[in-house]
Amino acid sequence: MTQHAYGYTLVEMLVAMAVTSVVLAGTYAAYNFFAQQQQTLAAQTDVDRSALIAIDLMQSDIRMAGFKDINDNYPMPATQPIVIANADPGDVSIVFDDYTPPPGQTQYRTLVRYYIANYIPQGGTARNRLYRERRQCIDPSVFCTRSNSTALTGADTGEPLLDWVSKFSVKGLNQKLSGSFANQYQTLQVSLVVDSPRKIEGTTKTVTKNFTFLGRAKNVSLVP
Image 1 (cartoon, rainbow, N blue to C red):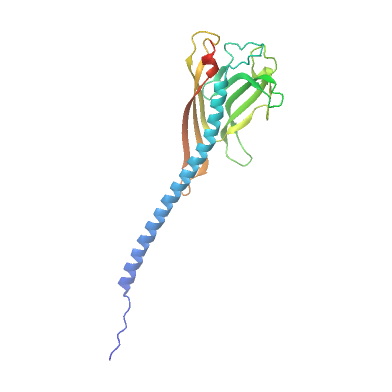
Image 2: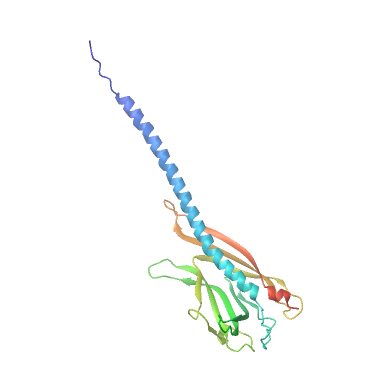
């Protein structure tokens, strides 16, 4: 009985290799797509987390603008609660009475300033940072500014609050018509554009997110 040997022809081998190549290429393309999507989502989450912390703190400070403790004998000048030194790039100062931590809780007048400045790390990439400057007014009987106040925490120029900020702008809204804070803004509209330092693998793209929010100066609004 004759035995027949069966095998693959050259054409069959070439066809099989071509099909395998197409499948592998499709698999790699799908993997690369989903990997980039995952990296994009991770970068967006990082940006959101950092920006929302800064936004929450800024809104809290804006809410306090113009607050004067009932036992404070020094008046709060009508134009003092919110001072916009520059709208874009933003440079805004907020003044209110605050207290030292317990025990004691001594009352004092504080100035909080938000602004952006260029930052160049050693061997790193130049970018802008959002800074928060917290200061104590030396003489609360006069209009409080940087020149007549002292730094409470960190460096004299403040502490970095948010990194990779490509835009920071401030706009005053809802100006009060009369009362103790006549012509003072009751609301601030703040716009931030924040970049992610991460490059998406296999591309030159980075994640950029826009944030626009309102902060209400509650004390300015409520004080007659």
